[in-house]
Length: 317
Image (cartoon, helix red, strand yellow):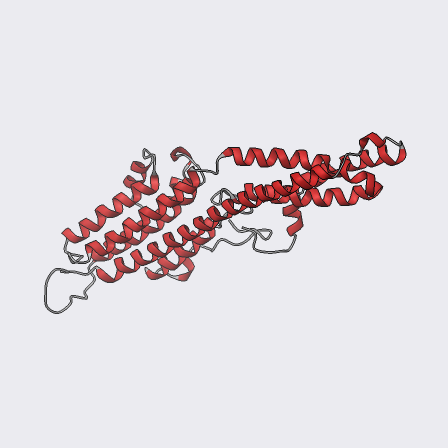
């Protein structure tokens, strides 16, 4: 995600200005032929551009609206993931205690076993969070960074995950088993088990929504149709402008081409919000920020916390 306007044009022009560069060359050739060589046959009527331009604008607006709706839905779902991870960790730290099912005065003593259970639940939540970006970006299980997960999970669990097709789902499954273990060891009151399970179910639903967006693109026909019409339209622009504008076509045709080309490319860029690119969601940054927060809840000293993901050249991933 671009977070700074400094040097913005250097990032935007190579992506959104391709059509303008092409039309600039075509405009120069058409203007030279029409003005200098007298090739009047190069000029074509402007009426078709008015009709096609109106329909093309409607098509581009429709596609861009659909793309941005996917982008915003993805950000909403990712916000739900963060909120449920934060809530689950809070409940894991506040609801677990020794002799949880016994009535009478609350036992606030924290045994080593209870401390291990609390830490295990929170660290697995962090591992789930870090397993999401590679999965949503299309990385296979073989390409996943299991070394980074080893910081939060037992080594035998990491080895088990290597054989899993869906790593985040497998982590949530194990998390559910650990909640049940905490109940069986009387670290969790029976009435509190459904509360934690509700957050695991909410994480499953949010993750499923993210998968839907990542695995189901807008029908390719929309993109192919819009891209083809835009390039034909902007390529013919100089032929429609030259009879009235002459050499001024070199300045105005690329400007109009940039407008249509940028609109068409914008829809393609935001259609896949989880991809690792300038217009993608900053999943790594958001995950890192929550990791730091949860490890602070565990009482880890400041010097042991990871550094937050900073923007590089005005872009944060």
